Image (cartoon, rainbow, N blue to C red; front, side, top):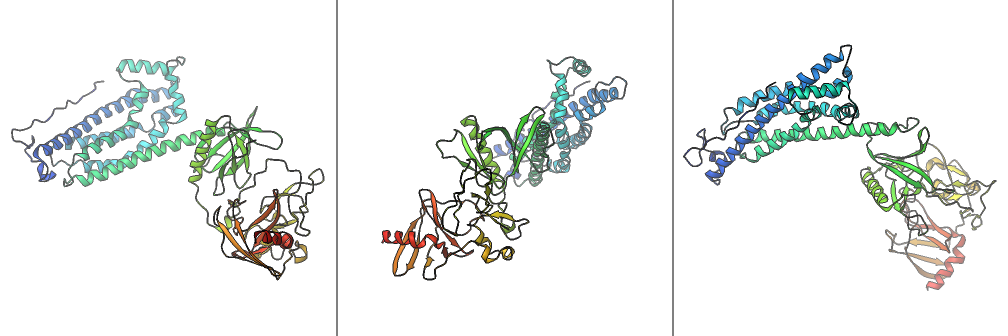
Length: 559
């Protein structure tokens, strides 16, 4: 098989300065400001690039014909015989649609040759490129098959350290007879061709004057080539991503349901989950829309939980000095927990991956999705006593959890409490599909919802003492930590102003859960009283249980 090589000769310049071999004046398209020497140099560069495009296209077609005639055709013939070298499916997988690519590029080469053989300054290559560039997307199928896992496994049979097989023997004999490159090197040439087109057309356009009649077509052709290259790269990434997700799914004893058209794999690794009894070792799998973690068994991994990555998902640092090093908290709408990695470098990689994923999450504005925007409260420490403050008598419950006292979570504020402190089941938001358990501190604001008004009567709700002579007016609402709020207080002749400096806030990071401002009075970490507000109102209505005792003493001290 003779390999034809085209010899390139540089055009000889005429004696006239600025003239080309075809007698045309390049300054016609480069303007009066351009020198004759500069215009002639640009024309020579364009001609050299055009001839390079033609010569490389000819060599490319030669390699495609070699693959089709001396590798694909004999392997297909052997696949139909009694002693196949590769199966018919494997041959189609390795070579894909290379015949169609060969036929397309032969026609492309013929049209290019007609233009470039008699090249002048008026030659237009943009129209030829525009006619053929849309068909270059057929390279995508070839790239997907060539870069697939199955094709790579087949091509591993040609490695030097693999045992001798019929395919390896056939490959060695064919390469020796043709004196050509190995088959993997020949199969990669179509993948490299589109980027080569981009480089050559960019260089050609760079030396083309804007006033040239071929300029606009060249710009359009280059844009389409770039789109095709981008489309091919995205297709390669999608194919690799699908293969990776399928590979991860094969690690599980049962199908975890990871395969999805829009899902992309981001990262996986080992993290230790902080638990009440003992820390558990899990393998975490991060995708663009979910976070899953599983436990390894003899039969494979067993999926423990899938967490959606939505607007409520976030990563928070751990400031507790007694916590394990390299710890961080994963806050989400399903189950918030604390994890830690084996080293600081691994933690930094996880934080960056989480940050990249959460930045791509769209923000939800629908009120019906407010439940999904809530974050589950972090509970990894085993609480022994109920922490809810009963409004009937004003004292904390402090009931000890045990065999006969079960722990419950308020779905509104996330507090851990006993059954008597969370006896209500109401809708958390308008349009909620199911009722949720809430505590005595959260029931009254929720009863304002239209869907909850008929669920409980007034006598079933906790007592809310209201004193008519006591009025609390809010003049400004704190918007950020460190900002002061002024509440004017009037009670039985005691007048004064409480200046509250918001040093720390609790649960304010939860969207749609506490939309209204409130202030908490606490002593030694124990919540004493808390302001309650009506929805869409800035005027707090205080829980008056401790008002006469605490508030009066605070006013006297401040005055």
